[in-house]
Structures are given as structure tokens and as C-alpha cells.
Image: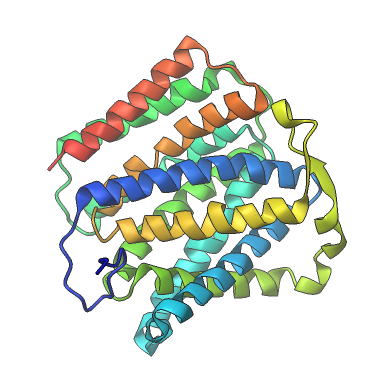
Length: 315
């Protein structure tokens, strides 16, 4: 009998750190590719708000179907759980996605991610000063090393056309990403990751449906074919196909992996491991868009990986 990856809350389970780190690493890689896919969609005229709405609604449908097919009782919810689920959906999922899409539409993906990945420091600070948890010095050094590596990767000193609104949105993404990780860490103590994510996306979808009613969505554009840019300029795909990738492999799978990983590793270590995303994003940009990797960026990638490894070996 195959052991379930996501045990029910009442089932005893032994934390497996190696599995947790692997889950977050795979999720980070999928999120990195999704950044480029999303930028192609945004370039077609779909707004950040509309793209977030599609992503939330699509993830809700997919996760709810998975939960209904595998463990229907997991979708039950108690009144006392609703405040956390609403906070996870609105304060975490809804806003972190919108702010990220808004930022990458106005900034280079690397710079937006550098600012967003201040989130692990916020998580560690919250754990230390609010939860009163002991945070070992090795974790702080790992955070500093990883952030230094990210700075080298994006070569922020070169400047460029930096949008004030994009930088502000990246800051919001950092805060809301930290909020999401902390709330998800609490949530997986009460319910399984799939149903937790489904409920979170339900409230995120309701939030955006109120702010941006579906009858205003430009449905006629989803059949438009757009260029994939870079080395794939000659390749064109319909927007709906890119949206389908975004929902399935860019949302449902990685979010479920991140939440599931929090049953095996802490939010602080999950946040540090997720810093693989900018590293992979640079590689994707090189392979897909033809952007070059210079020695400084390679050094930054090495420093980020060293920081992640240091965090993993800290007991």
C-alpha cells in the first residue's frame, strides 16, 4: 500500500525534512517558469487583476475536484476555522499573486523577486519576536547569504527603468508572501494541504470576483494566439493554453507542494529554500529569452544555493 503524501490532520505522521525541502524546491522551479509564462500573458493585454482572478478561480476548481475525488470529508469546515481561511485566502493568496503580477509587468522578473524574497526575513523576525521561537544564528547567516546572492543575480546596481509602482508592489508581495507562509503553517496543523489550499483559493476568488466582476472579463481575448518571445518567437500559442499551464503547473501543483512541505519543515526554512525560484528564473530567462548569465550572476546563484544548503543543515 502506498503511503499518502498528504496525511489527514488526525493521522500521526513523522516529519521528513528531506521530503519537505524537495517539495519546496520543485515548487520554486515551477513558480520560476510560471513567472515567464505569466509575463507573456500580461503582454497580451490581460491585466494583473484579471490574470490573478483566473489563476485563483482555476486553482479553486482543480483543488476542490482533487479533494472531492480523494477525500470528500476533508472539505468540511468548522466555524472556528473560517477566520484563518479567510485571512489565508485574502491576505495571502489573493494579494500575493496580484502584487507579483503587477510587479513583473513593470519590472524585470529578477528585481521583483529580489524584493519579494525579503519575505523569509520577515518570517524569521515574526517567529523570533512574536512566536518567541529560538532562531539559531546559522539561520540568520543563511538568510543574509541568500539575499546577498540574489542581489548579485539581478545586478540591481545597474539600475535600469525601475518603476516606483513596481517596487511598491514587490514590497506588498514580500509582506503577503510572508503572511501566506505563516498562516499556511498554522493551517496544516488543522487540515490537509489540498483542502486548506482549496478553501484559501475560494476566498481569494470571492475577493477578486467582488472587486472585478466576471462580466467585465475580456473573454474574447483568450483565443488570441501570442508569441512566446525570445528563442521561441516563432512559436505562437493561444492565451487559454498558457492560462491552463499557469493554473495547473504554475499554481495548483506548486502551492500544494509548499503547503504540504510545512508538515515536514518550518516556515522559516521553507521560505529560505523557496529562494531557489530567482535562481531558476535566471536560468529560464537564459534558455528561453536568450538573456546571458555573466560571472557575477553565477556567483550570486552559488551564494544563494550555499545559503539554502546552510539552512537545511541547521538542526
